Length: 377
Image 1 (cartoon, rainbow, N blue to C red):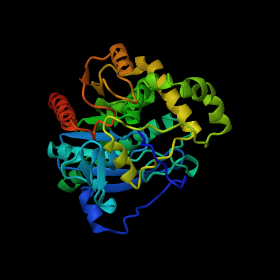
Image 2: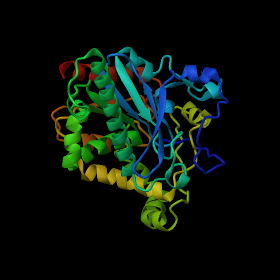
Image 3: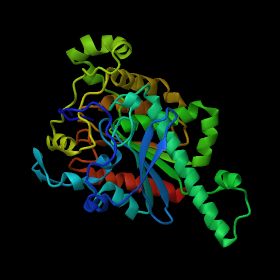
């Protein structure tokens, strides 16, 4: 998901430019902010909005160009109809109150998110924004993050039980056997592809499958998932240039940026919101990243049989999605072999579902879906 603008600096940005403004810390709900190093040594920024005694643990994955706070918190803007947004305060841009994350917290869910590599405050491959070595590296980052959260929660419970004299097990046994609330994963756009690809990766690997029994992923939600972009690929510029030469450009000029960005026309104010966020890069992706996005869609569809049948799936998608097309999602949904799957189709929205008019209806659907599954776990 990208708006039609660009930034001057192509290097990955780090740190906050809020100048230590206390208001900015308060408005985003004061998440616990942490960093871990992924398997390639990149520093990945993470966020946690936790509640006491959660009924569920929810992991959020953002889309292309976005970041964790950008896509699931509200924004400090004033709308002028659907045509335009006016920025109120760039240093206090993310607002927790009235956001999706606040609603999840109110319903008893602890929420965790991360800035994918090359996005937000996370480092990018070769120190570049929107540039990756391989698409699946982001999938493994999310899986690593989920495991870190799981082990941290087990450790906290272990310490609590020790203090109360209730725990005689070793720390290792505690991490393996501790019962935690069910885990859910949700991704928007590219993030939707990532969470489905994560499940396929679990299905393909015996070691990771055993690990999933430990971390207990009990459901996955794809919001406008990057499952099909076939209509975009029919455009002459893609059909006759970008697609035929994608692999060559990826190898010969991996950091070159030539693929045109998208512009959202159904709700033009969405483009303004992208422009306002200082941690959103509006430059095109690199040729390497563009090629990896194409491969990601192909790999997701090729490996559909590896999706675990016992993990419930919810697909939320608009028939009018201008970026990731509905018919391809419907075909994918029909081909998924699952004991519990649902396609929640929309008629009056576009692609950036968490920010568009009507997003409250989706939030209600997702919340009820998770709580119903959690109550039966």
